[in-house]
Image (cartoon, rainbow, N blue to C red; front, side, top):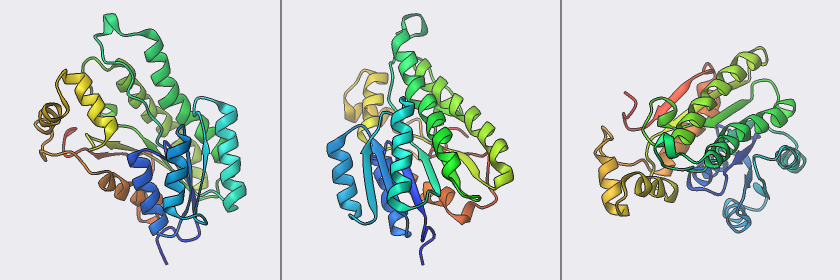
Length: 252
């Protein structure tokens, strides 16, 4: 029996590298997984990889309350229950000094990261049994800070506030709520962030960021997924309201 045997999960941003790595880890431990995201092609391919009986998907804009509710309802209808919620959808936002930071980019970044996590919790919590787990993907910059990323950093800090509110509110039902804070991950999303932040090519930018990480390398998506699995499973049964850094030491 796997650590998640008989359980079902919904993952937003499910078609991305961290979302899919997490889905694979969950399925390997016995869970059914519902992928929600914006790329129909990637969602379909991801669900097919995970196995037709074990996975389903739905195109979902996490800033839309109606679409998030529809995804949650579809997950429950497909698998009969919902035990694990992973709010993982995210965008890069703009990279700019504060005086020049685009207001629309700031608003959009908070909408995806903060409103998206809020809506997922709002619609999922009524479906969850006691003892369920909610995980919000924040970032190392949700624990620290960096110049020129006002939208992204603000959103990632705001997710911590949301998590702590939910953890306190849902504790009487033993529903655990935690944030995970990845550092640089070797994926397309991070490489675009690094190129924009440094103004250099991908190889040079990655080297610059490696120099900022005490472990001197990027994480693999599977390394983040293993911590997601820990938070989703009973292995973390006495953890709630926690900010769990998986950042190679960047926030230390």
